[in-house]
Amino acid sequence: MSDFSLQKPDDAIQASTTTATAPVEKTLELSDLRRAWWIWTFFNLSAFSMERMQAPAFVYMMSPIIKRLYGDNSEEVKAALKRHMVFFNTEPQTGVVANGVAAALEQQRANGAPINDEMINGVKAGIMGPMAGIGDSMIPGTLIPILLGIGIGISQGTGNPIGPIFYIIAYSVIILSVSYYLFMFGYRYGMSSMKELAESGFRRMTSSFAVLGLMVAGAIGASIITLKTPLAYTSGSGASLVKVSVQDTLDKIFPQLLPLLLVILLWYGMRRRGWPINRALLITLVVVLIGYLPGLIGSLFGIPALQNFRIF
Amino acid sequence: MQVWQAALLALFCYLGALTTPWVLGTTGGWYVITRPLVAGFIAGLILGDVQTGVLIGVAVQGVFIALITPGGTVPQDLSFVSYLGIPLALVAHASPGVAVSLSVGFGVIGVAAWQILSVGNAAWAHVCDRYAEEGNIAGIIRVNYLAQIGTFVLRGVVPFLVLLLGAGFAQNLISFLNNQVPWLITYFSLLGGALPAVGIAILLLQIAPAARLLIWFFLGWVLVVYLKVPTVGVAVIGTLAAIIYYRYFSRLDTENTEAQNV
Image 1 (tube, one colour):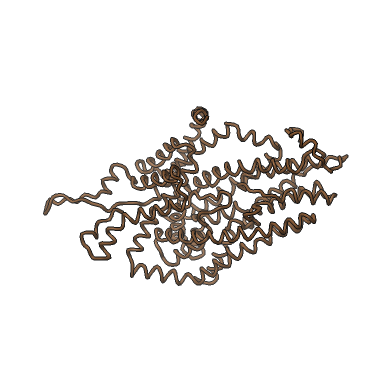
Image 2 (image 1 turned 120 degrees about the vertical axis):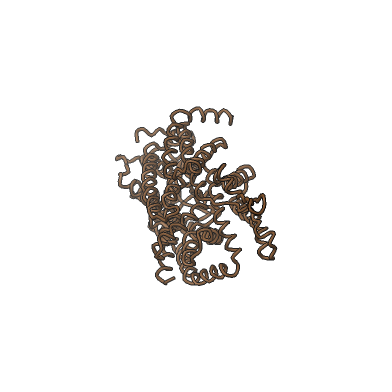
């Protein structure tokens, strides 16, 4: 860990550490780190609660590291367990970079570096927040919709099972590689990792990724939303009666226009008016109901004039 | 629905729950098994109609395409959407549109199950505190397994009972609605077609940092409606567009955004 530069505040240097300066440097084996990563991958939310969120899983993840570094000192083990039983919450698949950094800090601490509890947890908290935001917008916000969009494209209309199978394989392989890399990255670079991630190169990558995500979103939207109008107008009479369907006319000018307008309405409401998701669902319910209502009233009460008047 | 079918579906409901570790944690469970596209496939396999299962999965997936769970709060519960809504719609021979409406209903109910779990599990954190005091690593590790009891009851046992007892009810309900109140079924079908618009709008909200980036969304849309490009084709074109954007435009764009934000 020679490349690990500690930018410690002055009070951290004065913090008393009970660690005896060991003659032999304590190091973590690659197998310890791999084991910790695997534990986290499986158990990150297993004992999740609103109060402490992912803390029990964090301690479980740290257990091979704690045993390796402090296994011969029960007081240090207790201190380490308590240190990591504090609130922890992030996007578990990408936020794992914080776990790697925590492992690196524990190793430094075990070798006598003046790192106190507040510092370790401060670093964890400093990473888990931004990574929760970045991770949520990158993974469930972008990667998953793109992969699902491709899967939907394969299965749509035919029910072809290759779509879900593609998603299962693609997602698992991508995420496991990314998560493993991020954990090891966090361990290698310690605190400096977040500085690198925050550089504008990363933002450029995010917005380029958004280009792909948005195009796929457009493709999915255009193919899965169904909203058509049965409205028609008639002109002339008798033999020269011409019935023109509004939907046919719309399709000639801009196919799938109504679904696009609905998406824009909902997007506008959520972005500019701050509608929560359930309000957006309710608005959709009402919009469809309004379009359907005249025809419904006509059918229920036997009013022929209204029966065929439906907007949707 | 046979007992073994209900049991298998409930097992997948549990394995795919947000807090279940056994199938690669959240990665293999919540983000794979519980995605409606995958659930439709699995439910189709178990119930003997893969094609219809996948079609229902595709329809339901549209609504929940961009659902994220920020800070552990879920506006809609995917476990019940995927493993109650989809199988019940499948056995009741509901159309994909009706299946979407049914699933959204289960999604709202499921949120309560999630809240019970995430509040109740706080007790385990206090057990961990005591073990930490004693330096008992094995005890804390054990808690990570024991906390699964609550998840198993809410995501396994409850869905099993609902599926077993609810299958006949769902069949009767759908056929009653079809015969007696066809207008309601028509409304649900219309609604099911329109609801994916909510999913797409949420997705735009998530991935477009600025409104002007929506131009890419429109580009994807018109590629499909005018040029009939399949979704996979749009993904390929999108990848090329993203590379071009990264190479030649993103630096400029990011700098402009920063200048505006200052």
